[in-house]
Image 1 (spheres, rainbow, N blue to C red):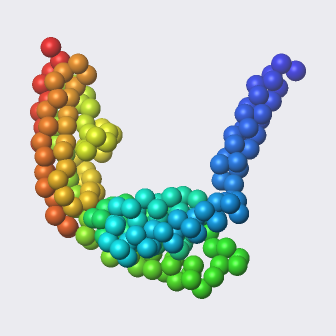
Image 2 (image 1 turned 120 degrees about the vertical axis):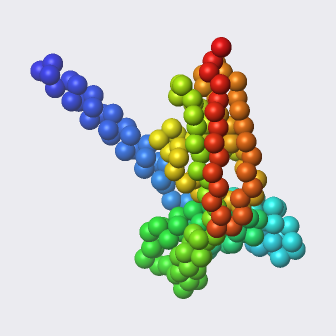
Length: 198
């Protein structure tokens, strides 16, 4: 009898996880859609007026609420105009992976096709950085403040065009850093040798 208790606990845990997952994946509410439509309209108006940053914020919020191919492709187009090529491509790929609704409109289907096309166009435009670290102890490495897993060091890290700051340090040691300017379709190498901890 006691041997079944761990199984029951495991089953209860799995059920709780599935319920939580279902709650997180709940479809947008009518209020979400209504708000998303208003934000989408404002975002497109701001983009037409030349306010790309304002448009990005509105369209990002609209897509978070509505999550449709239409909000997604407009967000991606704005990200591209801002030079956020990696983000734009990921947004496009997210749109392509969205399940097709049974009542999907022609506009949504066209947005899905546009997203696939834009993702393919963006891929060769991305820059890349290879980071090489020489240290006697495992190093903590960041690119623009984002941690890079040790297993990914030495591999091309896709980045947006522009300046990027790479830092490295070992636990308790001083940080070293380097900056690199990457243009579209360009790859760069950065080598860092963080000093050991005192």
